[in-house]
Length: 267
Image 1 (cartoon, rainbow, N blue to C red):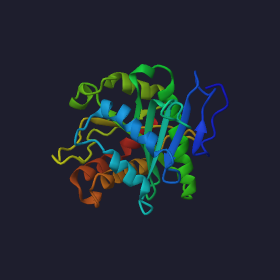
Image 2 (spheres, rainbow, N blue to C red):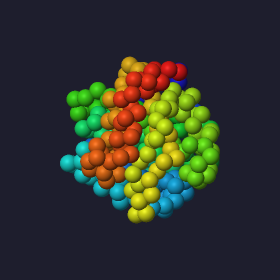
Image 3 (cartoon, rainbow, N blue to C red):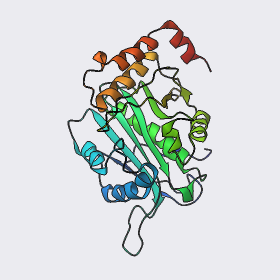
Image 4 (cartoon, helix red, strand yellow):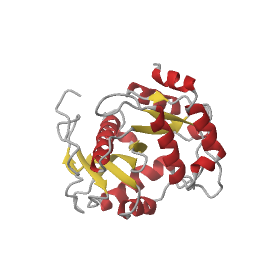
């Protein structure tokens, strides 16, 4: 991006002239929940068509609960892009184009990009990349507000050719390659596994974990941060004592192996 980078310090911003076209941008967090009405519309317009009501997916009520819980060790940061988001009316309603959701885990000092969703009518306009860029700065700001540094930030996505990939209308291989162009690096875990939040209890075994350069120093995270994100995700998915979980122990065994650090330092 050649134009001046937007300031991630404000909660409510206009990104006009930052990307092609005139698009508003609002950020919602526990510090500023004034955009909850817009968020509800974004959930219905973007999240449900993309992910459905599958039991593995989160409800709007869970998002609001996470935003409103002052004692939570997990901070929600939600960004929405579109037109007329600042002052919508019944005669001039908002046109919601894209949304991204990230989590900052306070104890572990790591970030996790949960979702980036762009409406099919507005793909290939650069909105996804700007939502992605903005989220990394929101995560860094969250770390600084907690007097920490952001040890790393991550996302995971379906591996091409798997069951979860079959449900990705954007295309799992296309998505993976896009994240690599944005600086993403696959974390070389052969056994990346997450406990399911679904009632069925089925584990998630067909995703890949990716990490990205730090927004301040552009370094990839140390192996300790990879342990931290896995620990944080296990806790978030209801495993309060990850160290006793066999899947967590298997991943930790790989991470502490000397060869793992060599693989992370490679291209």
